[in-house]
Image: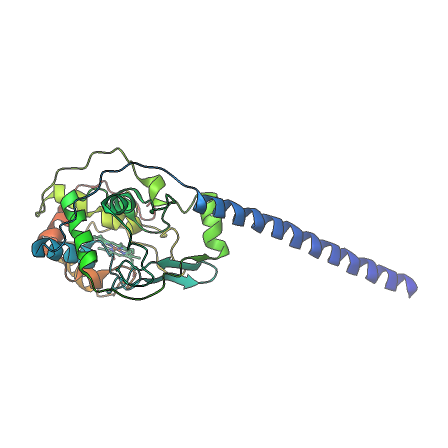
Length: 309
Ligand code: HEC
């Protein structure tokens, strides 16, 4: 009897010992993930940039900027900076935590109020904030092929928007996002951009060349090779981005009409509807020539099985 009791208490002590051990390892492990991600987030980079001319008040340019911001680049998405550009949470759920797209207007809580032309160029072309730290999730790499004229137009549009008073509360990252940052799986745009690359000289039109500029806005989700897969840093509930290459598992059998319909209405040829993570509501307003350009470009990419990103 006494022996049994002794045994039981030994087992109990062992369990407590193990429990405390795991807790300690877990705490140390998470502590290092926390510190590593925190130091990456705080790391500063210097980059001399040429400012972009901002055609403030030029109606045609502001219209062009409005079109790009709302229907092509996703700036005003209701999951990103919001249609009023006053900002909001991109993701706000554990275990990802909160990733926040800040207020871009001139109102209270703005992060861009003091931005000059160089600061705008630094964030949009290179993914660096005014303080030299790297922006998280902000897909600057998607925009690298757009001309100074188009980027300037977008900034002119942003600056033409009415002030919104909304605090930019910033990120409050959960364990999964921190783990992805410290392991390098979730990269900053700054680290993905080839900062010295030459921009293609393509004029807007229904051409493959212009499609190569526009496709940058798709690769953040569909991947560099456009074969789709899990979207890095995304909400675990999101479906994987689909394969846009001419493979059996992609859109090999699609016609241009199928593509246009999917882009503008979210309806696939088989009648099923796409998840709204695919921003078809924004693309509903995309110009026919821009959709043709994307299609022309997609006809020329190598076929790849789904999920290779
Ligand atoms: C914010 C992420 C995101 C962006 C940006 C994005 N997509 Fe998607 N896209 C998705 C996701 C996720 C799906 C799959 C949705 C589903 O399965 O319900 C998808 C599906 C599609 C489909 C349907 C393919 C099929 O086989 O059903 C097409 C076509 C498409 N996207 C084209 C584009 C193009 C072209 C662009 C750029 C102009 C683009 N997407 C930008 C996330 C995105």
